[in-house]
Length: 330
Length: 244
View 1 (tube, each protein chain N blue to C red):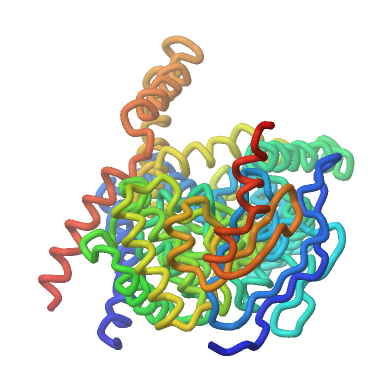
View 2: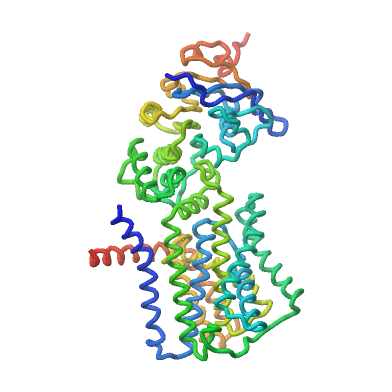
């Protein structure tokens, strides 16, 4: 029993450790080239967002299209507090998480109470991004900020990108572990059962509304926390931070990766981000829009060849690695 | 057999628009029994179970379980009280393995996932599910296996009363016999009271202690299998009257 338990903890923490160790070498490998470090930073943040989405979209099976509502809300709150009142984002990020979680609760409670699901849930959440986009203009005017130059751990903002990258890597490691923990816990079993069949889940005693709401709040609070990191990595924020297309992109990564598969979503986030950047870098100047056309084609090809997501490839791979590591460990 | 009343349904009615699916149905299920619930298509059998398990809210009448009024409570609350069910049309968890699906049921009575997995294993072995297929995904197993997983998932919640909704529909004769043995075993060894909705007469007559016959939303008659089979009202409900 204890043996199984320790092995369980092992399999929750080990993947995050591997990601942190492998990720930490990247700045050295690219010779601290700021372009590549920034690309790595943005990839890590995208992977974090997609893995947060995996909790509501992958495990609970709710096609949520509101990720950038929570990122925008939490991120803008933390950044504004820093700019206007010199409050450290260490506090601001937690406040952002809290406010995003509260918003998720306010939105999720009536949605789940009245049984909004499937495409209607997707539409409602997509509307949330639009509402916040418009509401933020009404409240703050058509705002568009560059973050004034401040530096140091008090602001989690630096002259070069490495420190923010390491910080984000640690956050990603936490999110990976959280995902793996949830998938092995009662919550994970219940969310997956809800994803598969809500009526059957309810009949074996699962309070469907409660657990969907819980998944939504966890997801939103993570995004509210990451918001500040996202904004700093973009150097700027505006009403366009509440971005519908970006929210859809997060769901695309979650689906292309494979619903509920940590390794699949993680790989999809990295691959798509890097391919997108490569296409933009090399083809963006050739013919405007060509890189997006190729990127879209690529998504269609993946959809045809691997309709169940990249997880069908990565799960086999991780299983092989796990077997090898365990053999070496014991 | 003890005679304590487990479930009491008191003049239950349910309408869908102009259709009266259940009309003033009253019945009792005693602890330890296997009660067959039969009737022609559209008699209201599944509606009855849906009203008892909280899927539908009845328009009038009461459902009393272990002396407690549970009328109109949501399904997950009723599952906690100890009523489980299976589904006429299977509700499989395609992207979960067999053991995971049953574990989700077992987690109702424990928070510990490892313990729930052990219990799920025991339940699956009890109903004779092949051990080699425990790790298979729902989308890769056959119809009878789905029915067994459905059954195991319900039993794993440790119910006092279990409704089986056409559990042998669509199965081959020898598979029906297998399920009949499993159902009797569940009743005898796990001490679970059963309400069995069924069209396959050979199956339901064989396993039931008592039969309840519904017809057009009303309770037609009830009695032992032999009594019910001889009842002219039942014959008429199934076959109609003799042409004159």
